[in-house]
Length: 67
Image 1 (tube, rainbow, N blue to C red):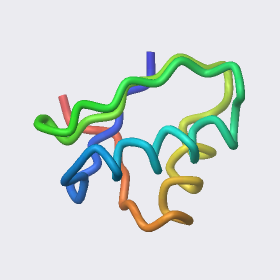
Image 2 (tube, rainbow, N blue to C red):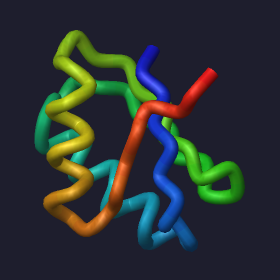
Image 3 (cartoon, rainbow, N blue to C red):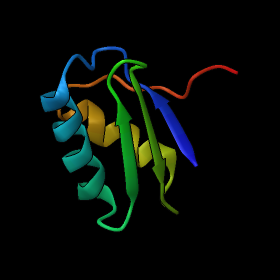
Image 4 (cartoon, rainbow, N blue to C red):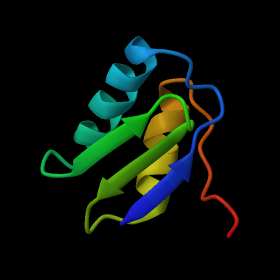
């Protein structure tokens, strides 16, 4: 499970854009966007850096949250 913090998620449209970006990296990835928590959780064998880059390309800063 990959979890990303995406602080500038504000609405369902943001969530849809993020899901499209994730699917652009890995069509088979499962993806859950929690708008209220500003978190993205996904399952994929691809490296987290691929998803961070894809989200940045569509305008969303993403980072692995500190534990």
